[in-house]
Length: 338
Image (cartoon, rainbow, N blue to C red; front, side, top):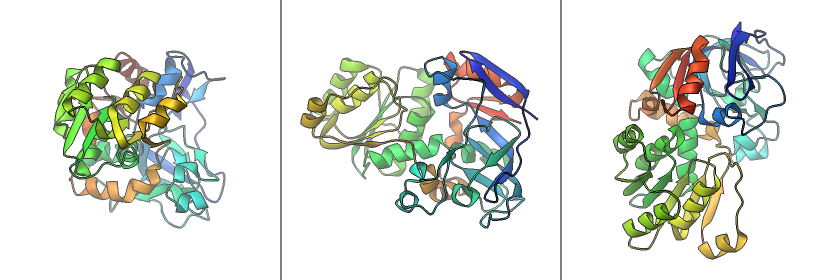
């Protein structure tokens, strides 16, 4: 089969790769229905995150089970399934606590931009949908593999409550779905920070009540102004830069919570500043598996439509253009069809 391989900065190739096969009794092989380019894929694509060798890409996926190992009990061939970017066994103490992305036996699932995918620890990782979904639901179901689950975790970690004020820092797919998540959790005000009209429009559609275009200190000042000097109850940090983290810490009220899900790059925290901010700070790799049943139900009942974050759809063999479009901010998120 052919799949996506990153050779170095802005060097994405679609080339021959070995077709995956069952290696362990706990494995499953999926025929990919849809995959996509993640915002976090842009870190190595831009050369900010180094890679040591040509690297297969892709960690968001959904599709049909083709084959299972002899030990797999919870999914079977022919089912449509969704899984997390971290495979988890579902049985370790961290999994039982709801932090499957810190499973003691976790494995990164990072070769999904291809027609077929091997998923280890299938019983603890994959969740089947109630049936084979119609084509128009597939994009939304795909988001549950990462960006919707990550946006949801940002809102959970930020302790979004009914009637509260939430600020979302970042207008990529995760930030936009953080807006949608905060709306689902009943936030009374949702302030989205964005400078891009198309993303602002989608944020408003997803439930944002206000848009702030300023960044950095000016952005913090604007949040303070909008909250009568108090600050936000909840801040969802969905970028992962020093500026976005500082903006989040300075925008939350004393006793408020920050959920940070942007993969940190160059982030350094000032202990004294954090101490006197009286802020709760919680985040990390989203335990997507924890939320999959609930989010599948919401999508299946058409109560949410997170697939709207995909504003570019390409055949998988045009994956390089999908990366370019997101890198150049011509697309929020690229969906790839094998």
